[in-house]
Image 1: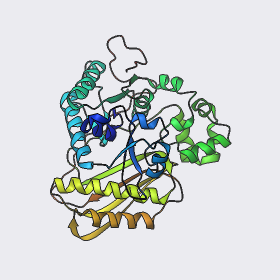
Image 2 (image 1 turned 90 degrees about the vertical axis):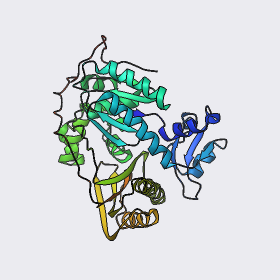
Image 3 (image 1 turned 90 degrees about the horizontal axis):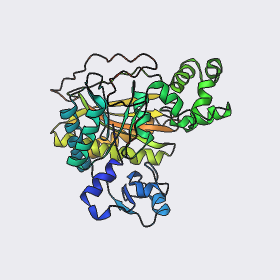
Image 4 (image 1 turned 180 degrees about the vertical axis):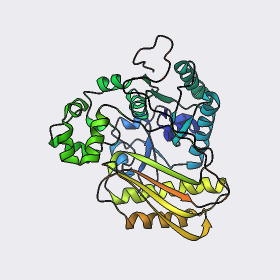
Length: 364
């Protein structure tokens, strides 16, 4: 489940006079980047992580609003609190505007989801695009297929067929650099990747990544929906629309994420003594770096400074797909995690489909 243009929608709810106009959520500094943009602004080629100065040049008439992370987090809590209350299924919230749910235990899951989406829209003003599938990869790809307000149901085989003609970039984990390397092999679409010999992929990308790309092409994914009622840390991360190599963009994003994390800590009257960053590069390599300090803190300036030092000391030599900031090491919180959910067999849609629904259902 993915909220459509979440930050921009929250701002439009607060400023209804801007509905229908191109709206950009971004800071005002010389190195500010776009946090998100309304769909009207996206028509001009504006996307997240783009320098705000370039966005203004692309659309001089756009209304630029500074981000208000308190408002976004409050609306996020409202949305996912309602989802959790109504769905009563394992829910993994991966960001303020996106979550995975395991709905295999529901009697009529599609009907429940449609009713839930309508209630969320009516009660919060937020529109959710839904993707349903046998695993997280299929569900995520499906949720992006018909935005905004999409409702797409696919089996793994259906996903293989539906997205066969799409560029490999549509697959989670295939960034610009990987896409370019695939193109050098003559692989430009998902169908080409499906037809590629595994030996050739292993020779070009190495055993681990070559086999992973092969599995990705056929939408195999065994990652479970994981939940935790209480966290041992607070973090915020963002996935860029386009992989980012510009260190200034990464710095500005770290500043925004650190401010968001610290604002949440102060609201909960919580402090931590371990500050960390998370990076995911274009080839899907993840790494984290942490530093512990002597005192507990939720001070934005302090956390930002350490996060930036960690970024500078570990600046990646590859484009960055995702970046996050984390504060941990506070007391009195115990994590709880359920048993892993067993993945569905390949090609099987592991949930009851009612109402005569076929492989795919579209929503407006």
